[in-house]
Image (cartoon, rainbow, N blue to C red):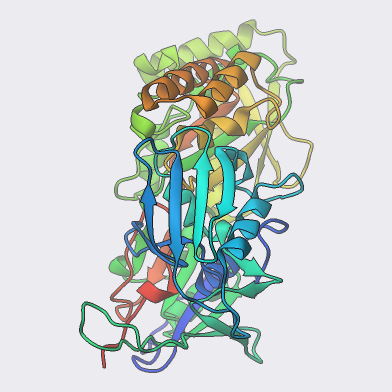
Length: 473
């Protein structure tokens, strides 16, 4: 139990204390290791990419000081700012190009790799100019380049803007050596140093409540009950308006979920409105479709049962389960992390499925012995293909070769209209096959003190060091 603690906030002057939920911050290569919240914040601070997100999630310059996009949307030409590595040597276009190519290379484990296939060629035109050619136009392509997974490293050395120094307590001190940049022509801007650390959720929240941290980053549904039990001020708990995949993927084509009818029955039995209402998060809506509304201008494909009231859905689901040639009682194993919020989610699902004669058992998130597994991922880019490629035959046991073919067509489609047509076809096939049981959008939250006047909620749940606080001289 986390107790609400009285006391003053961290100093209003001096370094800002930022705590990420996870392990100690490490400068990792995202092509080989996954990033938790502390390491993602560190990476985007000290190893920027061509562009970055601002506080509101809009694109602004980073390594590239400007860029142009060809009229057909196939070529992005970036001019690099005159920046240096820490040893004083220039950051060149070829170094940047090599790093970006590595993200999509055969041996890369970068989580963005499945959608980097849209890139046809990355070429250094001069020492200061880099050109990225696409196989077909992609809306929101710059959002992809702004993710920390596309950071530019050289032998695990960052490209800036911040410089990191380890601290004896296991944290990292972030400082900005360039203090002569101008903002709106108003003269130099001094950026407050940041002490970044990583720890488990309960400790991070306790530090914030005690006034020993200015911001806690990386909150998910799993840790949300802890933040609410801590008694933080309502305006300190900030939710990002994210999109992405939050629901249950089918783990195996064999066993009780081998037929689409049974998978659809499980999905239609869930009272998503009650689930979302219980979470009490403003703006969060239940979702019955894989795609969110409006992504790439598509109307998401919905199963036929979405038109039915909940009572009729459950009656239909119960009849489907009863008619299936399955053991009685039907038992399914659901792999979820052992965290308070996810345990509450499972309790809701177990109750809803019991209403149609299905018994659910929660199993360890890492086990291979499961029927369903939680997906809780924020979409890094506003592309329908990001959602659909999770369920290609190379990635999912429940798939369809026609859906794969439609996605292949979308990758090479010459126009936005033809791309949407292919994507809609793939979405329709997958909606019928039901490899995924959607629930809502991913939940991401932060704890934010009044000192962070630059902090803004945004659709990508990315919060850059440059935007947390700025001290005018």
